[in-house]
Each structure stands twice: as structure tokens, then as C-alpha cells.
Image (cartoon, rainbow, N blue to C red; front, side, top):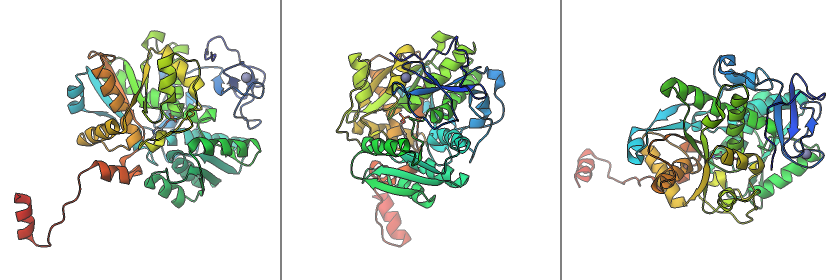
Length: 418
Ligand SMILES: *Cc1c(COP(=O)(O)O)cnc(C)c1O
Ligand SMILES: [Zn+2]
């Protein structure tokens, strides 16, 4: 079982400015910026950023991701700027689901249209610190869009590996216009990540997938924003946060934010919102692990879903995310593509436009509510991860068809009267 305890950790000799990397499996500590490292050199375990001190609420000031600099390895970075996303009220859905409170945190409102920007502003800052010239990622689309934009802004070369034919049009267009070199790989996302990890290990590029522990540092700010907004609004933190799961980076990042707040006595351990991961039936290895009580995930070689952002069979951050779901008393559930589309439409009826993967959070919540797993007394946040326009084809297919009419007012009136 991964060791995710933060308490009682003294800064090791390798720490730089009070920051170090620790292996979550064997505990070995590594210098964070002196060398490029993505996994434990001793056992191959995942790495986690650790600090000599963890911030309290009053240490936060300013706006966006960098408001939370006290919880990040640097004070600023290449910024477009990101974060400060809306926590929408959804009265119709709240009533329909019969919940005490329901809010939608729309991460599609970030500069490139997904939460990936939060991780990228920190990740690119670290890349500058370690002094690399080429950034790279494997992507189901949104990571490549963010990498291309932030890399361009930083004046760094960017390389992205995508699964051929499985990336939504909007995301591909973003990577292209921001000047990334885009390689279409025969195979799925997991194949792309295997290759780009090899390239990174050979020193060919700096890896900015969520295997990179600093990406997750940036993504912690989603949790900080939700908790700050909620405390202001309700005087309490939410009971539950539902989110789509691909590589499980966000699940891991939210859990890390909670642990840091507990560490600084800013949150009680039994107050941590229940992390509730949602996947689709065609790509649900994490749900399988939670349902079967397995310690580790079994890789799914064949995955298929219309929610292309989470078409992932080998969630790389599972060793960090599974304990997060279990320790917060959360759960995981899978939904069908049809349920995803229904949830995408339901959000659209509230004026909120999200891409298919993002709608999973609501689809999963509905299912858990129907099964009685989620109580009506709960205050819940659904995280929507990407913007509607990321996947215009899915949006058009989920919406109603345009109606052809002749080009004169009388015909239009006749048509409307039909
Ligand atoms: C990347 C992404 C996800 C998956 O997030 P993980 O942190 O990998 O679990 C979900 N939805 C969208 C829109 C994404 O871009
Ligand atoms: Zn190790």
C-alpha cells in the first residue's frame, strides 16, 4: 500500500528550498530540480512533491492558480492566466436529483478549455528550472492543447503523441495552431504514453503527463478553490466531489490538497470530501479495482468510449488515487456512453457546455443517487473537466438537427407554425 502520510516528515538533505520528491512506495527522497526524474530510481514507484511546511487558508492571496503559491514549488510561472473557474449553481438539476446542495465546478472555463492548464503552468515553470528545451506529452487531446499553448508562451519546443483518429477536433486544432509537433500514433493512449515515457527516459524531452508530480501540484488548486468557495457560501466543505477519471491525476491531486490542509490543521481529517470517481463502461479499470477491493489496477488493453478524454486502460496515477477514494470513504462507478450523453444534455439545459468526459461526473452522481449510495442530505460538487467546443462533433450529435427552410419570411413562418 502506498505511503501517503505527510506528517512527521523532516526535509531530507536533497531538498531544495524546502521542496523534495518522495517515492510513495519505498520512501526514498530525491532532489526536485537538480536532475530530471519521473519515477523512483530505486523501485520505480510514483513520486510525490513534499514540502517542509504546508499552508493554512490565510497563506493564500491573489487570483487563479498562483493564489495558492504557498502550496506550490514556486511563486509564479508562465500564466495565461488559469484557475478561478466558476462554481455554478444548477437549481434544476439539484431539484431533480433531490440533493441538499449541488454545484458544478466548470474547468472548461480555463484558458485552453480544460483543467490541464492548472498543471501546465506549474509543470512548465519546473521545466524552465531544470533547463530543458523540448516538452512532450502523450494525450487524449486536452493535455496536448495545454502543452502546446503553454510551451508556445514559454518559447519552448513541444512534441505531442496522439492516438490516431481518437482525438476530438477542437483539441487537435489547438495543438496545431499553437505550433506543437503532432505525431499520430497507431495505437491507443496507453501506447502513446509508453513511447513518450521512453523518449523522456532517454533525455529526448521533458515529460508533462500527469506522471510528472508537478502537474498534480498545479491541479491541487481545483480543491483549494472548491473548498474556499464552499466555505464562504455554506460555512462548510462539500460532502462529496464527483469527477471523471482517466489517468486518475485529478483524483490524486484533490486528495493531496486535502491531506495538506489536514496537515496544517486547516481541515479535519473526517471532513475530507468523499472522492467519487466516474469512468465509462468501456474503460473502467479503476472502478473494477474499487469494486473488487484490489490494491492495484489491472490494465485494460482494449478500451472504447465516446468520452475520448478518458479512453484510458492503464490509469498511471492509480497508486495515488485508489487510497484517496478509500480514505475519503468515496467510491467509483461506471456509466454508459448513453448516460454520458444524457448528462451532457442535462448540463446544457442549465446553460453549461461540457465535453462528453466531463458529463461523467453528473451521470455517475445520478446513478449513485438512484442506488441510494448518495444521500439526499449531501452537498455535492460535480467537476466538469473540459469545454463543450473541445468536441464539436459530439455536441452536434447530442443536440437537435438544424431544420432546412426556404429563404423567405412567409415560408419561415409557415415552418414555425407546423
Ligand atoms: C485529462 C482529462 C480527464 C482525465 O483526468 P485524469 O486526471 O487523467 O483522471 C477527464 N476529462 C477531461 C476533459 C480531460 O481532459
Ligand atoms: Zn521507491
